Length: 468
Image (cartoon, rainbow, N blue to C red):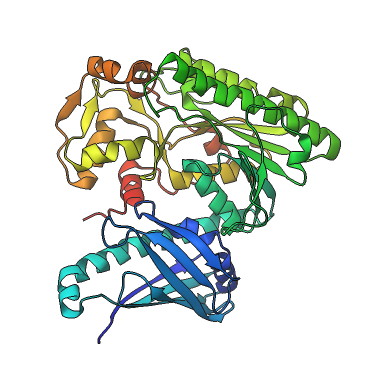
C-alpha cells in the first residue's frame, strides 16, 4: 500500500556531528516533545545504537493513551539514524533523521517520515489531513527548539555538574532536559529514596529532605545548584494553612540548602554558583510603574515571602558563592502554570477579563525561562536578582485578547474583582488582580537574547498555532 511522506529541512547553528551528538543524548526527547502533545518517554532499552528500543506513552490520535514502541536502526554517527514503529497507532512508520554538513559550525537537519495510516483508504480520508497538520506543527516546534538549544549551548562550551531541586516541576523538567541534552552532568535532588544509576534521560538522583538540614556531602562534585522547589502558589484556595505551606516550602528549605552550599564551598571550592527561584511579586503591586532589579521591595504576603526566600540565600552569599535570585513572571506553557489553567476556559469560548483588565502581566515563555537560567548559570558576572520576564509586558485585557485570537475564540466576558475574591480569597488580590509591570534590566545589560519577546508569537509557538 502507498505511504504518505512528510519532510522538513532546517538550518542548524552547529556542525552535523554536533547536531547528531545532541540527538543521541537520552534527554533530547524531552526537549523536542511539543508541550501541547501528551507524550512521555517511559522506557529505553540499550544504548543509542542499532537495536535500541524506546517506549513512549502517548495520546496521538485521541484521548485514549497507548504505548508506542520504536526501534533505532541505520545509525551512521554524524550523518543519520532512523527509527521505525514496532507497535503503535500507525499501520507503518519510518523516520529518517539526516544531518547534512554546511560548514564547520553549521549544518542542515532533515526529518523524513514515511507513514501509513490504519484502515487504508478510509483512514487516509478521515485522518490524513489531521495527521499532516499535526506532523507539520510538531516538527516545526522540534526544529525551532533544536536550533535554539544548539545556539545557546554554543555560546558556553564549558560543561558543568549541576544539581537541581524541583526537577519534575514545570520549569525544572525543561531545565533538566536542556542541560542534560547539552552535555552537562545533571543530578536531580529527590525526596525519599533515589534511584540507582542513570535514569532514562541520562540524569542521576540524590536524596534530600527539604525540611531538614542538608549534609554538605550531598553536594559533592557539583559546580552549581539550581533550587526550584516550592509549593505551588496557584494550587488551591489560599487558606491560612496554604499560605503557611507557600512560605515554609520556600524559606526553610532554601536556608538549609544555602548553608550546605556555603559549607561545601568553604571546604572544596564547589559548588561555586547557587541559582534560587524567586518571584516578581517581590515588587508588590507596581500599578503602571515599571520596576526593575534596582526598584525597592513591595508589600503584601507574596512580597514578604520573596524577601524571606531571597534572604535565606545569605549563608551562601556570605561564603563567597555566586548567588542569583530568579524573579520569575508568568511562565507560558500549556503543560502547567497559569496558562494551562486558563486554556480550557478560553478553548471553550469562556475566556474573561479579570477585574478591570488594566493590571500588567509580566510573562515569559518556558523556552526563554530555560534560556535565562542557562544564561545566569554560565555568566559569572550575573548575580543577585534577575527578572525572568519578557521585555514586553501586557495588560490582562491584552493578554486575554491575544490568547483568544490565537485560539479563534470570542473574548467578551468579565470576571469582576469581587467574584474573584470570593472564589480565590487572597490569591485574587496578590496574583490575579495585582499589576506587575517588570523590566528585565539585568538580562538586557548582559546581552541575553529572547527567542519570543512578543506575546502573539510566544502564544502561537507554545500552543503550536501558526499564523494564518
